[in-house]
Structure formats: C-alpha cells, structure tokens
Length: 247
Image 1 (tube, rainbow, N blue to C red):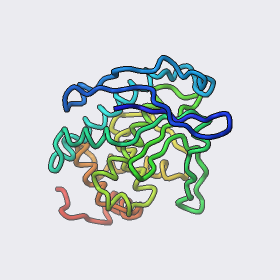
Image 2: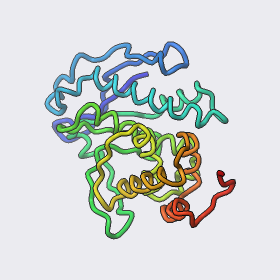
Image 3: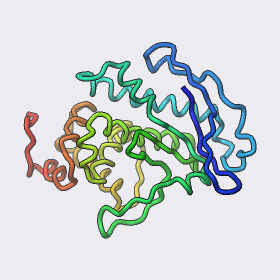
Image 4: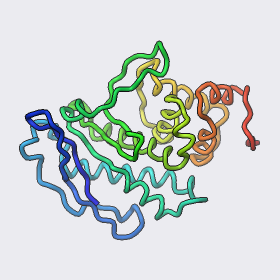
C-alpha cells in the first residue's frame, strides 16, 4: 500500500502525491514496515516544515495503526478477526496535507450549540472512510501522531457502530475519538465550549464514576450505547440506566 500527501500548486490547485510504500509481510501489524520513501518533498518543500520528512510521517502512520489495532483487537473480537481489523484500518484513505493545502481542503463545521467557540481545524475524518491530517509549523511529530490516532478513532466508531455513528451528536462523536487519547494518558488541551472540550469533561467524570475499573473494550462498548450528550451525562450521574446494566 502507499501513503500520500496533499499539496497546493502555484495556481492554488490541490494535488495528491505518493511519498511512501508500505509492506505487510503477514496479516499482523508488527510486520507492517516502510518499503520505500521518496527522498524529499522536491519543489513543494517550502510548504512543509523540515521535521516532517517522508520517512518520519510514514513511521508515525505505522505507529498509529499499531496503536489502534492494539486497542480494538479485543473490542471487536466477537465479529472480526485480528486480520479483518487490520485490513479495515489499512483500507482507510489516510493522507497528510501541507498547511497551505489543508486551508483549501479543511471542512467548515457547524456549531453544535449556539454558545460554542470557534476552533482551529487541523485534521478531520470525512465520514466516508477518508482522513486528512495537516502538518502545522508549530506541531511536533508527537502532535501529528495524536491527531492521526484521534481521526482513526472516528473511523473505528464509524466501522464498528455505523448506525450509532451516523445518529450521534458532535460531542458523542468526539467522546468516542478521545477515548483512546485518554486511555493513553495524553495531555489534552481543548478550547472551552467546543464538542472536544465537552467530550473531555464527560470522559473525566465517567472514568471517576460509571467507567471506573473497566477495560478499554468495556468502556468503548458502553459509550456506543449513547447518541446524545444529555443521555450520557444522565447515565454518568446515575439518572439513566442502560440494559443490561453492569453490576
């Protein structure tokens, strides 16, 4: 399989360029490796910070896939084999984007609530098995990996529970995507009064109450029972019971 990056031409058109070829020797994420990479970004190098080399981005993608597979292998074992899960992750159209290109590609999100603040979009899942991750000048490779994992979390929500994904409000969708970040102990800083911030607050409270002591699979499967922020809040606060209710 290949990895691609979205770039912006001099006449403000978008072009998709291949930059790495990956090799999978067996149906196991541990055998996923970089087979070849382009040496540099050529005439587009002015669009991309030098820390984002083709090899570094390919390595970040591989680590993200391994992370997602590790978390979800037990979660979806009842319906997918380990090999099935890996193939589903690898079939997603994952692309990096230069900041200049992402300015033309990034979606415009409608505010979920009237009082919500605007927030800067640097990565997105397009609801159709496609992911774009921008490469901001002031980000680290670790930041890029975190955003990739976050968007792959949206993908897994869509793949694992498609009806729930389509029916969920923005805060619930962000709650599902943020769960992996929280489980990894990542330092989350989100602007107040946004779906991401509300999701973070819900997970903090849930991990102190209803989700306390549960493993990742139990947490994920519990959260997929909710489509609305209010219902999840009521569940966390003991005002709503789901069946079968865990002891």
